[in-house]
Image (cartoon, rainbow over all chains, first blue to last red; front, side):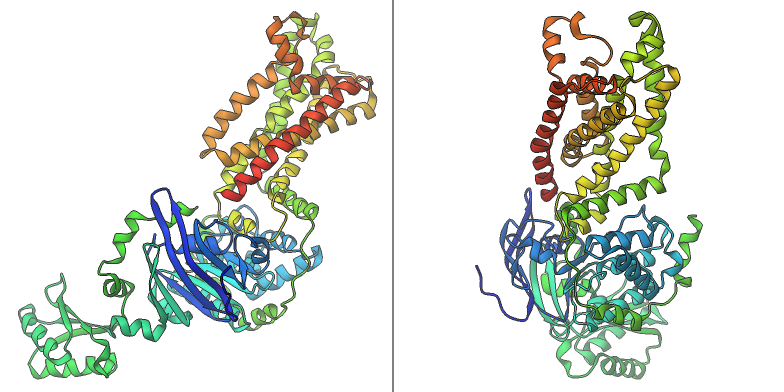
Length: 335
Length: 282
């Protein structure tokens, strides 16, 4: 038995899961403080879903230990199940049943009486704006509605720990924002959330701490600020009026910003990656760059300031981009 | 209906953060449901599925009618002089055969269902583990009852007269359903073990055809060669159809009833734990 630290919702040590030759999860250590949103960030196939499945007692670890609120996920699986809720990557509700039927079914399974299950379902459908769709089969729901009913099903009994496995993958930006609002409301009431995502901005919006995971290993862990600082402040994208001025513009930017400058496939476009430790904010650096370019007589048609993308985080942390790891390990193997 | 799904996000009512917060405040969890109550809830799920897709009742209505008509008129004249006389012997047997055949759909539905995301949720709930599977079988028991009633009705129209009266018929059907419930654990096992729906179907056919045909459903085993008699006389389907035939005829065939229940117990004891092992591993 390992020591449990008080105040931790999840604690894992050397967690391993193999599928045949593939080490889908390869020695993951996590310490998730209770009452927070913890982001697990990584590309497809990094081992996120497999990790969540082990923590939710759906998969048995091949090595290492995991405790949820101090309970071992293998030996005390039942205690763990009593405190967590899972929203899987694909709709974890029965698509043949209606919204109401799904919620009443799960309410009954959680031990609510018939009447209580019906009341709670109606209230949740109301709160999630699904009252009109309550009598429709879930297979006729849109992506955003499915996510809502899915999360509603997870909070029928308020869980102490909620797993959200890629809750916004495949959603349009508007539905995405709505899911984020729901997550914030859930956390505000004291539930711990473990969120897996492929999007840095999603982790940025919701999580207080983030673990970056790649090929089954945690390659970086920390607060949002720490993680971003390790990557750089972001990048400036420019489109020039005249393609012939591009080499000169690149030179000006390199000098003014001390940044790495890359030409883009478009002959008038280029990108400068800003260094993190320059002291100025990304916006201040960009303003300075624009001034220098104007003085040099280079006309800029269009410019934008970009956050570091997951691709950049990966490049910075691992030296390879996100697409590579998807080939040798796939999360779906875990199903 | 599909047109309604595309543009709904725009029209979706906003999430009400206040009412959500109010709902989340209730922290206390109700006591866990009992094993029986969780199983019944899953049985309710099976019925909801029948409600939404009533076509799936085809195999417990049209198929049994076809079985009764086909075999009564195919063999009746040759084996018993006339279909009317044959059905007196055949009906309890064909009832057993058809219902035992229908049980194999359990494996197919388990196999298609288990791949869906909702199973991850069921498996992460703090409930009695076998209740998901028991729920299927409870839903199926309803289907078997429908099939039995349909076949009896057709049989009565064709001239079948059970001497055991209502009591004998009900006892016969009850025994058949208990046996089918127990026997179905073989299918839940295959449903979890095999990878595709097709392979479940293929394996099920391999099991079900010899098991049901090599029995005393159609003819008295005395005319069969010795080695076949040895198999037929010890087959669970033979014991069951003798027991059901006896009960419906107004007798109390204690030995055959005991054999049928004994086999039922054995199926649950062997295939139940194997199913649960596979379920926990899935």
